[in-house]
Image (cartoon, rainbow, N blue to C red; front, side, top):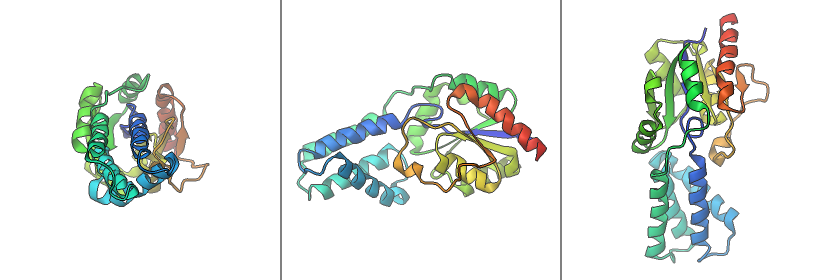
Length: 239
C-alpha cells in the first residue's frame, strides 16, 4: 500500500506560471522598442538562454531575471538602456513578490489525503521564494516534511524515499509537470497523479511518457485528487 504522498508546489498548490507569463510578455514589450523580432522570437531567445543557464542559476524568478538581462543585451546588440535593464529587474522583483493564491479546493484535497497517508511537499526553485510561498500558503502544517530541491529528478526522489525508508512502490507524487513531478517517480517504480495546469513552461513540457502509463492517473481538479490517490493505493496493494 502507499505509505507516502508527495505534492508539488507551483501550479499544483498555488498559481505560479501565470506570473512568469506576464513578466515575459512585459519583457517582450520592452525589447519591442529596440528590435522588430516579434514576441515569439523574443520568447524563443529567452527560453534558449534560460536552458543554458539552468545549471548556473537554477529554477525560479532570480534565474529568469538574469536570463532576461542577458537575452536583452544579446538581442539588442547591447543597445538597451540602463533604464530598461532596471525595468527588467523590476519585472523579476514583481514575480518574487506575487501573492500566494491557492488553487480552489487544493487545501481541502491535501487535508483529505493527509487523513490517510503521510504527505510531503517536494518543490523546486529559489529557496527564499519557495520558503515564502510555503509560509504564506497556510498549508505547511499538513506536511510531514517540506523539501525544496534544485532539481526534481530520480536522484532527488530516491533520496527522499531513502530518508523515509520506503520503496518507490510505496510512494505517489501529485503534480502538474509530467517532466518533473511524474516521469522520474514512475521510472523509479512509483505512482503518479497528474493534474495539468492551464499553462506550462515549455521546458516542463518535454518528457518521454507514453499515453497509457499504468501507474499514472490524470485529474482535472483538486477535488479529484483524494479519489485518484485511493485508486492508486488499491493498485499498489494489489501489486
